Image 1 (tube, rainbow, N blue to C red):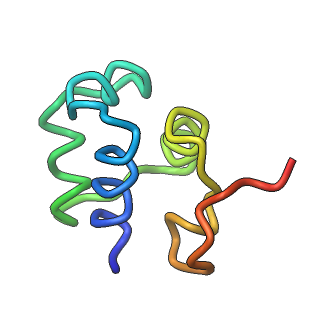
Image 2 (image 1 turned 90 degrees about the horizontal axis):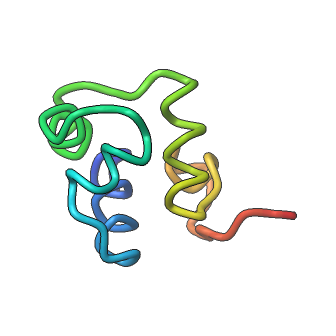
Image 3 (image 1 turned 45 degrees about the vertical axis):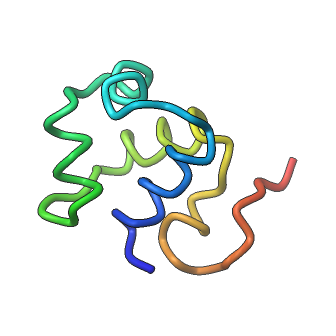
Length: 72
């Protein structure tokens, strides 16, 4: 599963719209759509913000693990 698909999957799991998640992260709905469709990628700062908003690890979004939970 790609980075974009994992972002979309976690967004759906958390029941956020693209607009809601974009607002939490500081980007537009169009930017979120680009990330989810793998036409663009978030930079490190946005990746961190996505992890915080979605409650998942960067390792999960970057396909390094299939466990979405963050270590505390």
